[in-house]
Image (cartoon, rainbow, N blue to C red; front, side, top):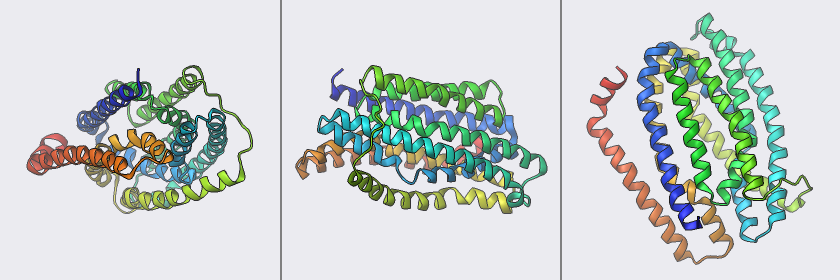
Length: 333
């Protein structure tokens, strides 16, 4: 399939996955509230917020992978791509170890931190959830390298097909009646399955094999300099979007977290809706910049993306403004 068709189909499949990812919470949030109860639903959201802090251990490197892969691809430098792959796999393997250690430490200190807001049984369960989610995150880092290679080569169909399969699998796990620990284990199992699928595609279809050779010191310095600003932004985002649930867990209860988490679910949908198209176009824009494309062409791309995103967001927001209160009463009770 040609690259323009890959791009168009990739955008369409991104929105199919986004629609599934948005509709599934619509359906399973009321179901999970009834199956798990408010307390365990809130506990699940709290565990996700706590382990979210471990993502900071990537030091903002995640946003640099596609950028540098796309730069080497624009230069038709296969060796450079393979060395970047090897570099990030090595870095993320170390990060994965740090995540496992950090997750274990966090799980050991939940009792002194959350003894005021959580019961004894909830404290025991959140320890298990944090450890499983930490393992899940540790696996996700190596997967992200191969996933970034696929995106940098604009092979969106395969990537989004795997994402859609993962989304549907999580839905099946929910309707099988698993509680919070079972759902978390199901998500971790999907991560284990996705790693070889991505790696095999990169090796067999793209012909790229990670090379663990020494990279130029100048390039490493440039990567670290670029990732520093992303890392600072990640800290700000984490403080803004994750600290709220932690404070509620410390001072209130899991029921309060559950109510708050319903609102956060809608916020996540809006955020994903606004970034879906721009995420797909990142490699294309990076290559255009590398090839010194005219500013008018870049502006035209940004304008088209901005108009599409505005239309989608304004449609969703206007619907929520008109029907939001009545919908929430019927939906979440």
